[in-house]
Length: 261
Image: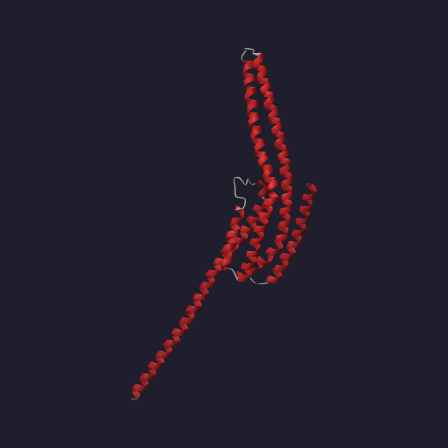
């Protein structure tokens, strides 16, 4: 009977030990799985967040270059699609506050694009007129060159033909007048483009100036999500000071553009 009791105790101890071991293993496995999930999320966030910052820089550059684009040949909003797509991916993996701030920033960039498309229209119209005038100018110049060649051949042929030479001369004068007219039209279109472009750049700079301070909270939250949370308050203060200095330069540049108009 004593032997049976001892066997029962040993079996109980073995069973209890195995249960404790299994419990520890389960806890460890859950912990490892949690850490691996956090690591995967951190890596994914880092890739997506860096892409968002890169696309934001490209978006700003794209907006500044809108006047030089031909809306008949390119999609003028295409330059922002990378930023919008990266921001959409970010909102799937970001913390709620970060996703909210990024969503708001995306909305503001979308609104700014729509507003700038209206502002840039005079520049696009001028570019179209430049292209049309340049095409006609090139054609008229080509005709003038052709007629001049005919006059040269006739003059060098040794067979004078005053009537034909006079007709060629009239044709040459006509094409030269056409060239001068289209050159003038092209010059006027360039003047309109330069004025419209100046106005557009002023408006764009002002809008970017107003939008830039709202990027600071986004950048701070991105760093917080990535675990780069050391001295965020100090970093935010530094970024705000840098922005104030940039704002002064923005205002000076805008003022110089106003004076040039």
